[in-house]
Image (cartoon, rainbow, N blue to C red; front, side, top):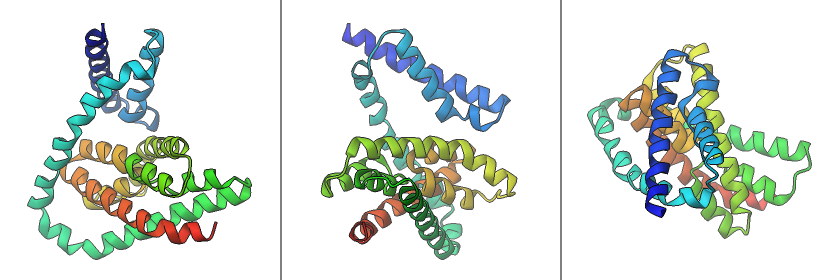
Length: 227
């Protein structure tokens, strides 16, 4: 029975992604972003099938396993375009730092305006890094890892929904710049969306995501001292 549920879960995930991607290509909109549409479709199907998240975990782990080789493969287009990467390295790192500073300022401003508690402020502060890094930071500072993971996912989904629309409106068409933006504000989900635009955009987003994670991990102790 468990094998059937796993195969079923993997199947609905793949089918949901393929359909979501086709819908986005035909009707591009923030609401038809594959990450968002695919997530809604999978959750809806699991609810209709009366399956819980625990039933989906095995399939999730199998799919996650293949993310490793896929992530490593992103290094290939990055290597092919290493001259461009070297040329724009300083502006790119400056952009990542500025982007992270803005997200932290927004998080602190929202927290102060609504008088959020310490756990909520901590979770908001790590919302732009990947779940593993956010959870590890929360464990070091006795924060709420589940809350942080939820904010990370919400940020990633909103980032993939809104960022393409904003960059299109602002006529930001350079793949390198779009990749930096995706990786900085929307971590892994943003990188996945960037890879759909082009291999190079996805590779740049992956690097930006990694740098953003390192910077947040290094800066969080300073940020924490002001809480």
